[in-house]
Amino acid sequence: MALSDYQKYFSEYQQGSLNAVALLNKPIRPNRDIRITEEKQKDINNVVHKAAKNQHGSMIFFGSVDSAKANQLNTIVYELKRPLCFVSCKAFVSHYIGETEKNLSRLLATAETKNWTLFFDEADALLNNKKSSTDANNEELGFDLSYLLKRFSQHPNLVILSIENQDTLDKLEHRMKPTIHFLPAGA
Image 1: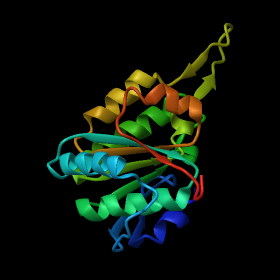
Image 2 (image 1 turned 180 degrees about the vertical axis):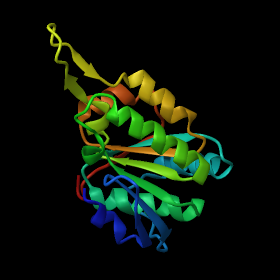
Image 3 (image 1 turned 180 degrees about the horizontal axis):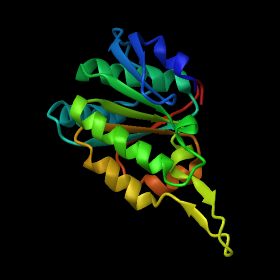
């Protein structure tokens, strides 16, 4: 989903230091999304409550209903009263070895000092990132999922990953809770 689709839920927008990063401030007053079950809403409220106390929290948004994701994200940020750091993972992942890791480290350090909620849109691109090596073995180099999840868990605020790929969900679901499934209307 494009950043512009999320921007309509916020009254302020700033481009970040990287093209793939933006800050969204001052969320508009949200409407409760009726497609979220009461049980999942309780899970979300628990994570938001922890994040409000500056305790780490994480969640996964799964599915392709982008308007529902944007609405739920708006609700969370409205309740936390903190800026949202929006990361477009497709644009964030660099083709240069080590560049994405360096940018991620810098982003997490800045987010910690500025007390940002982090939202990784299309996180499949980051979590399934593979790069070909130029050595004779032509090994695949990519992020170690455990390393990424450890870095995310060290962030003292809320981290939300938006994914659409079932394989990515299968890798993450037992490691990150809660998972919010966004189903199309009528499904």
